[in-house]
Image (cartoon, rainbow, N blue to C red):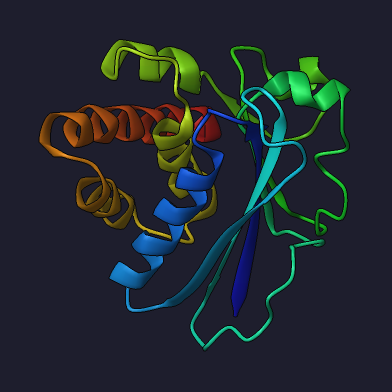
Length: 180
């Protein structure tokens, strides 16, 4: 089974890093993964899309993901600019960085205040690690432990631990929201 995720954000938000962290977490679970970005204009603040495929078998396809199983939106203002849900598979997962509920945004899916969580733990509103923690709670595709290990393998000591705290809090936040 292959699970495909598309991550939308803006340049400078760690969109590419988020996809790479998912792929590292998959490798840590002895699975195959592929992560790559696509850019429009390469400037800070420009829309950026990153892709991640996770599979139990080798991945041979090297194309952008047009029918994702999950969509992660790091910047909710993109909802007014582009169709981030284009091609989303039936019963696909939608995760948005927002303090507002998804229905207030006109969507079906889940929101998590990832920027606020990151600000508390990391000291900057960089939502990628928090969203990946929430992704674990929402999809069950990867374990939180694997994502935390990927964060620790990618970032140096204190930076890693602050991001681990953000991912852990967001995972707990979404688990509680899903149960409610």
